Length: 307
Image (cartoon, helix red, strand yellow):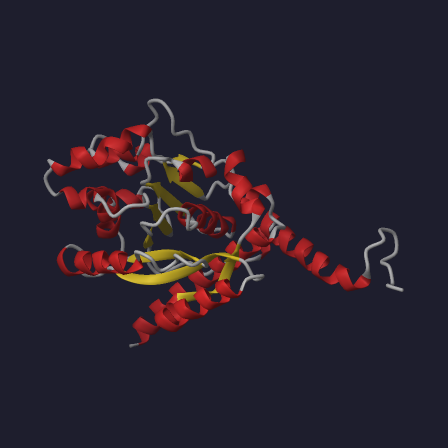
């Protein structure tokens, strides 16, 4: 007969993971006792994948929230006309609110468009409104159309908000908005779904990154790959994970983001999963992934300094 935990009927064999989850949830809710290394210089990271439904926006907002919860200042640029990142961060993006569209046109500054998220005072978002849907057509006729976002995200402009991290959430395409995001950043983070079509189109994205690096932004590099929607019950997920790790090596985070109902539900409540259900597997995984990004970024900079 299974021994029971006094008072609640939970088997001892099941109590340890429950207690562990509770303890880690407490870390999310009360992160002041934890700290993540502050990068030696501001990191601007574009999150891109032209394939839809791979967890791109979900990864953007939850990684940003995880870093912000641990004292780092984070700015999210919502460059997707759907405005899903704005929704998840609880930032208004309807009507005539200042948005990234106005920033791209040069009418307002990033600081004027940025709104603080209701989930952390360290988390800011420049929202996307429906006006952004027509921006690609308008950008075609503009001078330096590929560099409009880079022009807006100068060090001086960003210093007004002083973020440690800037995440740029791209639309699921390889159009001018995504090119602008690649030109404005130093790093690219690619979410890859642990399913059959995961690598479909990835070659085209990598080719575009190479073209941008060769002609518009020589400092651009793919710094991070995040495996998302992992289902440990399938052999396929393990095979995709192995293939991606074999090809990309240490660029792939050791943390894998599981397929999670809680992660999917959170945006419907205008929240990240860390705010919606901090004890869930999804929240814990994004917290671990954010720690990896923070630690690896610091380590890489220290190694360069040493050389």
